[in-house]
Image 1 (tube, one colour):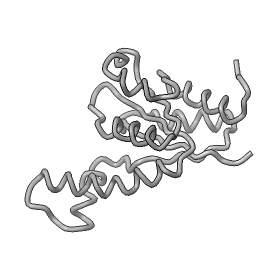
Image 2 (cartoon, rainbow, N blue to C red):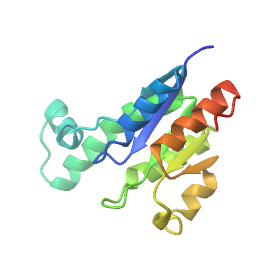
Image 3 (spheres, helix red, strand yellow):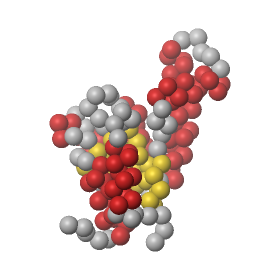
Amino acid sequence: MSDWTVYLSGEIHTDWRARIASTAQDLDLPVTLTGPVTDHSDSDDCGVVILGDEPSPFWKDNKGAKVNAIRTRSLIDQADVVVVRFGDKYRQWNAAFDAGYAAARAKPVITLHDSDLNHALKEVDAAAMAVASTPEQVAKLLAYVIRGELSR
């Protein structure tokens, strides 16, 4: 069975990526997990550190967002499945973009968020193939779609 590449997008302030990785390992899934740069300051500063200072915060953020988009779009294009996590503390506008970008490229999208965000994310969830509420559910979804076996 060949490896599946799973892009993990979205919220960077909790351990959800590690929980998916741990459960995937426990289930012995043939997956490679990829994702954005999760060091917040590196992600914010990449454009100006690499390409030079900008005169205003707007242009600094703009440059950094474009540099990060090179990574994000390339990895989403290479992914078999895209998981998009929305947390409750911060607004993850980039995650909404990632979900739309992936869906537009016919990549299966799994959204991951607490049920209290169901209404706010109804349009994003409508583009998803599945909506999970825990990282462990995501790993079990992957086990089912990769192997075609239902673990009870």
